[in-house]
Length: 147
Length: 163
Image (cartoon, rainbow over all chains, first blue to last red; front, side, top):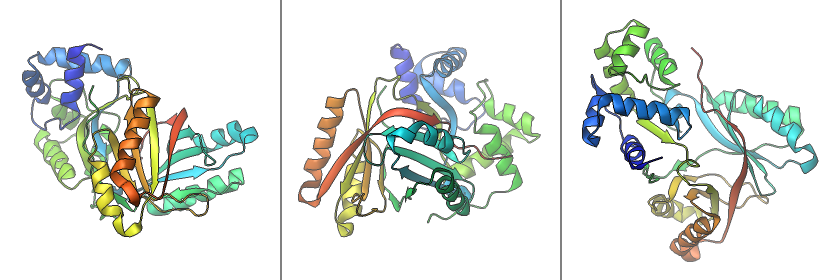
């Protein structure tokens, strides 16, 4: 990653314009060509410097639901449970974390009822209690990890 | 619970068409319009409306934290008094290294924490210093805290809605 990549990432973390030629507009601000900007974005997506480029959706505003949940998985059973949990399409992310609650995942569904159904399926399949941590309130953060 | 915006069939097609990303061509909204059989002006008007209503948070790039060198990511969790949590959460969210900050329910006795703040640093030491800054900010309002580091990504796909 070079300095231009960093400037592009910092510029693109904000709002990408909605207009006829948004790449040209953004490229002009960065002092590069439109084709150069598109090529850099393509390359950073290909080498996974960027995980996504496009609209970020807020599922709750679409009537859907997004819930953080956790399991306390016995070590001997960890791989089996990870496979079971990952196999659900409702599971968007899943991380191992070091705590008694050692598996943390995000459930994303198109309706709030879908969350309850997914939790029930996980509990039935694993025999473990799912701890759900729905957000009660989100505090404002800026998008600001400097590249 | 947040109020949901009513989406029509065209909005849903637009969401399905863009959830994998925006086309990397000089006129991306025109390309989407062609793909969906709509006018480019309508695609842009709908995207603006989805942005204003919060269905779209923003249009932009999501950098891979690891590729940027932020390899130490900690979920810091705090037990603070419920009656003070909103004021404290707003302050913690404003710290530059906090990327997500939420009030979530406790699950006693296993889980006494009600404030969650994701922090990102370039080393474990940096994250520990950041957590120290949050602890200093919370002061006596912090009754207990912990930091859970992710030691393995088991799955990462993001949301997919059906057509």
